[in-house]
Amino acid sequence: MPKRRVLPILLFACAVIPMDASAQGIEILPQYQAELDAIRADPRVGAALDDVLAMDPENERRLIELTEIEAPPFMEEERAAHYRGMIRGLGLEADLDGVGNVIARRAGSGGARTVAVVAHLDTVFPKGTDVTVRREGDKLMAPGIADDTRGLVTMLTIMELMDRHGLETSDDVLFVGSVGEEGLGDLRGVKHLFREGAPEIHAFIAIDGTSNTRVLNHAIGSHRYRVSFRGPGGHSWGAFGLGNPAHAMARAIKLFDDRAGEYVTSGAKTTYNIGRIGGGTSINSIPAENWMEVDMRSMEPGRLDEIDAIFQTAMRDALAEQNELRRDGQELTVDIEMIGNRPSGIVPVDTPLIQRAFAATRAVGAQPELSMGSTDSNVAISLGIPATTIGSGGEGFGAHSLHEWWANRDGHLGIQKAMLLILAEAGFEPQAP
Image (cartoon, rainbow, N blue to C red; front, side, top):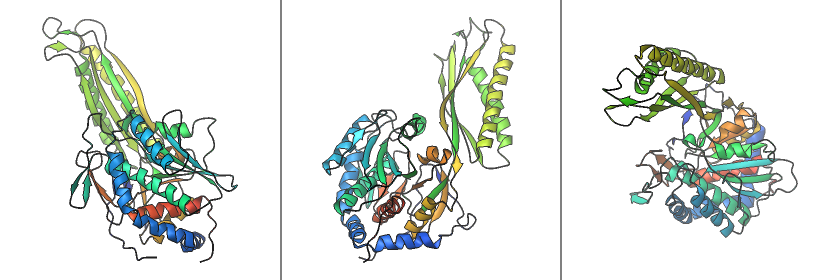
């Protein structure tokens, strides 16, 4: 096999945070390192790993092709149809499920488990965003190119090479291009995979971001709300004295910021953010409605519930105070609608999937690094199903921005790592070299 270089890899976004590996006690148990070494030494696997590097030009073409198909939140259909066509073009079966996920099941040789491998189809960018890929040196520049279009290409390459080289596994492997990973999508694609009565999934691997070193085992939970203060509205002069929803919302933000700001100064990391506000008709009108969108996150489920309670109380208190101040008309009302609920949890480091991810990372010459984040893995982790998120390889920067880029700087290593992990987790039986 040709010598493979390892370069420092930038940790790409997708809300993933590295943790101190030594503090987390990273230790690869001998049986898992031996398992990965044996898989890597199999001549068929070696040929597939070599092909990953040889496929760089084709994978760049695929990356550009997919990136230039818009996939706004809740509008992933065009990209999903094209991705399904790409899979079928390899001679493999792929279909769409009830929410629009692209599903390709690779049957195992008789094992009782299913290992899901997922990369998300959607981006954060609204329809009409210019997603044309342009080159700047070795960088490919375009919104969504690394988060997570590169993940889709990584998964496609693994499907192709497993088929080409006859890399059979004991367990089924379910390859999924998921919808709704970003923003208000609220992980709806993966939640559908784990809906009541759905076929069982026994292990879950998300490919998101680009780091070769990351092994996610800690899902950060989040609660998201849309809050709407409402009143009768009227002329700013003629109806002066009516309850004002904008004033109520401003008071609510102040109360929440004061109380939550104090709460987050101690304990496990917990955050809050008012991300969007809107409403009103004109500068000289008392608005009939003002709204805001709120995001809260925490490493621990209990603390997420506690800051949520602080938020709820602040909203009610602000409403009551503003109603006391009104001089005329009916009382203001508030509607607090939960629009996102990402569950949290932790996978122990001695779990076989995490150990195999460590060993696969080491197998491509990188040092594994534990991380936490908010990804498609959250759902599985919260249900007690072994899950992790790993990177797709290369270097990326500027996620969720118009200046996002990806560069093929030893990008093949990410694909190789993912393929080795999938083979190990799904029960590949290696042959002696």
